[in-house]
Image (cartoon, rainbow over all chains, first blue to last red; front, side, top):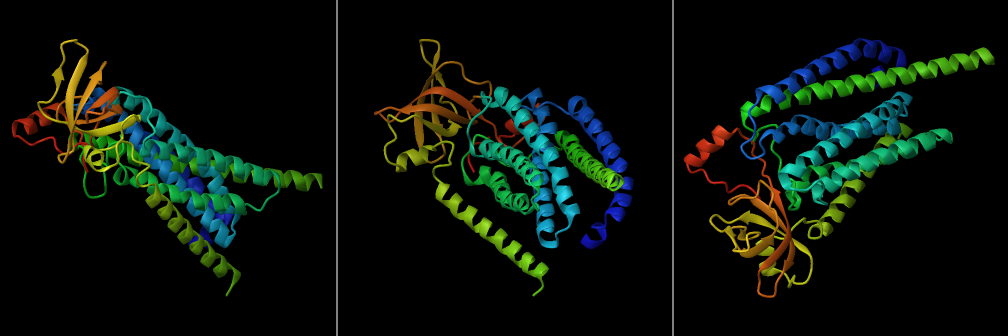
Length: 238
Length: 149
């Protein structure tokens, strides 16, 4: 499976087909979910209207962390099978994941002001999520520096794998330590969010995930196209 | 062993090592990483007076009193095991109410009370429309889940 996808020509063929499906499908779902979350669901009994921030906040948190998992997987595949397409995938994922991590922090802060009475507190969940954003930025800088110096990509790949240690800490921070952030509301088997308020969240989780995939594929295709142009220019000038 | 397998093995070993290392670091952090002390912590731990600390728990039902100066409130923070009386002068957040979670920032007094200079409301993981909350309140389903684990 990995080796079949590792062929750039075959990858491009599949990616060309998938990109518009993921991108437009995701965008349509997100628009539908936001419409539902802004107009169709009831306000919360305590948080009132500010509860609607979760329709953006929760998918952002999910993709900020999911983005790092996929980046680490790509790094792992690159280290073991040494395929350049895996390195390309990690490079395409990083800024997209970082944007979602930042969105999660910003929306959380806006929600925290009316709910908790503070923009920011150094509690376990908030601090570890901020750390994840910093690791994203550090990874992007390291990967660029490595490429500029003609490195073989091994060092950023190692950081990509090492960074996964943070993911379970973010996930369980609200269980291990007492935090200002509330515990988990949503898991595969149960939800403490009333069904009448839940469905736009599920739509947006799906929609943002598809959008994420679409944008990553776009970035990978444009990077591949750039490489081909560079290679052609090199051949013409040689 | 092929080089590819060697790298796969090394990669997996590195993952295991990272996992182990972070596990050790976290278990060492356990106490320091807590955002607030619970009333039970206060009862069992060494004296915390004269240090700026956070105290978290539930606002005990029927415990909020408005003092005669008009800006100070007194209430009791509980975790169903221990209790601490708290005084706070200032504007409390909207979600601060009896039976829900609170984190108070301030200092312990020698008398065993707590003087807060800031209050944070703690929200729990339950989200519901007002009608359902009303129904639950009417049915007597308590709001005990918030703030405790």
